[in-house]
Image (cartoon, rainbow, N blue to C red; front, side, top):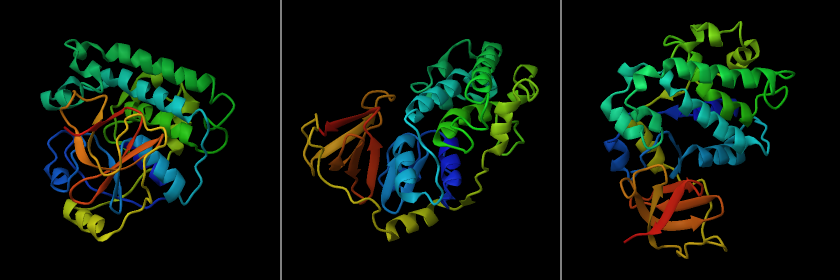
Length: 291
């Protein structure tokens, strides 16, 4: 959620936010045919973009009003940022890790389910120090941003989790409060902190689910898609009943069912019975013919 809001703000895309539960069930989303288990999702008319990969793609290619530089290294920074977030989750107070939250997230972040989770803070702090030291003394040694003198996709992919680690509970946006620790404070890493301070602060209007639902179903489709990829390995044809399941989920636990609209080397598009078209990345997703 954090990096999606950062990108939308950096790209000058106005957006509104609907708050939904952090964990399943999410009955409002299910009521309009969206059973995808992760949030955030991005609705652009009747096109629903699931997973940050397709969200970043559509924002950068079709929605951006301001240029946000990209580079061939962006996917590497995406993985770096995910690892930085996942490996420093031990900074989170054990009291925040409710059984419901752990159950919902443990397939994505196995660290949350460790029996010794409440002993991990010091090691997570050392991990965070190491990652900040890398940024401080390599890509930020001579530049204000990872890619040079302007905020880029690489910065957003790399820094969102670190900002969450460092910011206090009363910060904007809030975080886990590790920034007061001497191992990672402003004196230790001034360049990393300076980059974080320059990040845009998303300030979307919060609307109700019913307001969002009305806007979605009154709109048309953004994407003009159709047909299958000429190298489509599944052999599934347009119009077939299919399911899409995330590799990071328990098998067959949270599939999204619909009719296949299109596939490409980068994307899967299905239409659910309510008429919404859900977009998924090819990476990390399983497309199957429905049984």
